[in-house]
Amino acid sequence: MSRKRIAPSLPEADAAPDRSRSQNKRESTAIQELGEALANEALPVLRKMDLPPDLLEAIIECQDMRSREARRRQLQYIGRLMRECDWRGIAERVAAQAGPQRAETARFHRLESLRDALIVAQPNAVAALVPGWSDSLDEIKTLAATARAESAANKPPRASRALFRLLRELDGKAAPEPGTFPDDSSPLSE
Image (tube, rainbow, N blue to C red; front, side, top):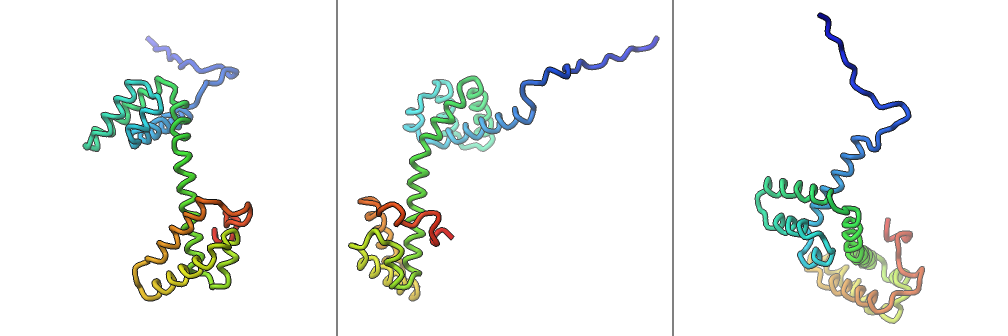
């Protein structure tokens, strides 16, 4: 008796599958990473995001877990719960929550690089770095020179910290006119 081989059913040439396995895997990984980001958020932030109650409960439980394996399994469970709800909407809320923090971090790094450039710069070049703050130029020059001397003498960076505080205060009061403050196109960003 001969056995008849049955060929697996193949999709027709015209009908393409909706999604590839790679796309499914990328989506699954994105959901998993989103769940991990949610698990690292503070409880008040999570409550503002208007998450489904079962998802919020799972995230709170995950935050309390100390065992690495238990946390991994809980994150997988969170991912499964997120697949059942509008996870793209949740991702948008997380991104919106992170936006102001990113802007503040960028401002902090910009002021740090300005401070470092002021300390390294020659006294006559300081005015070119901060043209919008000419009323505080003498104080900036003094603090930059003191910070340079402290650095050369291996002393604690008190003047450098004071210079950063002054720059942060000046930046918070009134930013210089557009085009005068160092941005990504300035020599400071190199």
